[in-house]
Length: 59
Image (cartoon, rainbow, N blue to C red; front, side, top):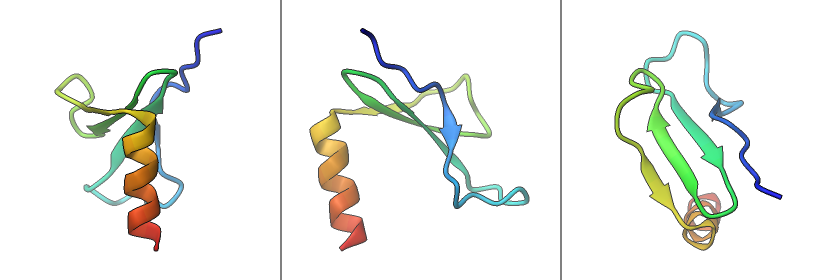
């Protein structure tokens, strides 16, 4: 089964903020994009790289 959460904003994003990121989780990647430019470029990370990143910033 293919996993794709669709794009979503962080629960920590506020409605009036201009600095929002959107994230999408799939089987093969975690994608990140600027919410102000949804058709623009996005970054893709392996699930392992994303876990390492989030573990590092939450420590």
